[in-house]
Length: 102
Image (cartoon, rainbow, N blue to C red; front, top):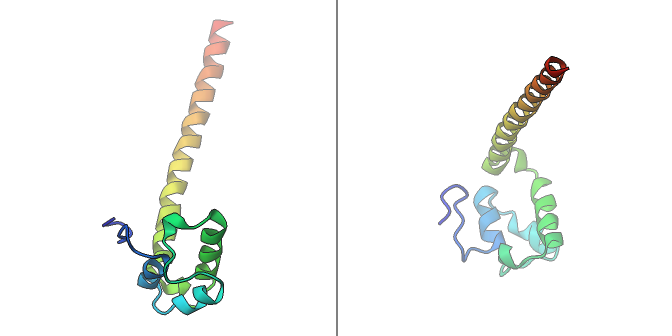
């Protein structure tokens, strides 16, 4: 079991999503996904469709999945800021070295 997302290898897509928002299965089934679909067997288009349906559900804003997405984006944003600051400092040091060499 993946302890971060609580997903087992043999879990279907609906089982995984129902852990985050109970009773979201009927909405996904209406849009062409069935209860036997495993995430690893879906095409990118099907996964994107499932994600769009899932994120447009009324209870999505209150779901633990949404909270985890926000936390992940915040951490990713911090890393992007650190990388851009490092690149700025490196570029400034390179300019300084060029000026000193000339």
